[in-house]
Amino acid sequence: MYKLHTHGITRLADGASIPADPQNTDYVAFLNWLSEGNTPTPADIPPEPTYQQLRAAEYNLKSTGEQFAMQYDDAVNGTTTWVDWQDGIKAGIPKSPIAT
Image 1: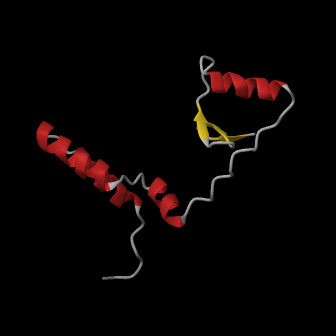
Image 2: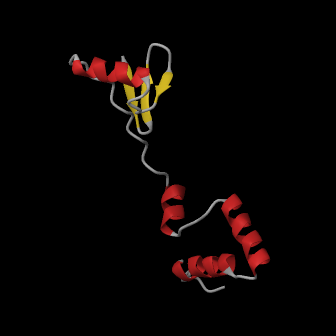
Image 3: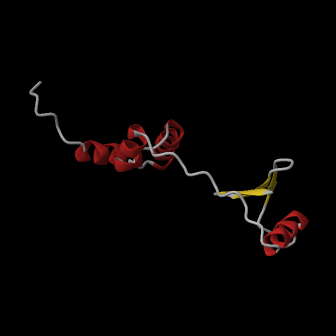
C-alpha cells in the first residue's frame, strides 16, 4: 500500500519516500500497482492556519533569519530594503483608537 503526500508518495510497508521519477524502480512499481486498480491512501488534509499565520501572511511578515539577511544586505549594499519593508508593514496596520 501507498500513501500520497503533498510532496510525493510513501510506501507504507517500510516508510520509503518515493519520488515521481519514471527512472525509479519503486515509482514504476507504484504505477503498476495503480494500474492493477489499487487506490493509495489520500494525503492528509492540512490543518487550518493559525491566527498568527494568517496575520503574518496579511502583513507579509518574514522570519528572523530573513530579516537579518535583509539587514546584512542593506549594510553591504547601502540600501534600505529592511527599513522600507518595516515602514510598509507599519503603514498597513490600523492605529489604535485609544489615545496614548
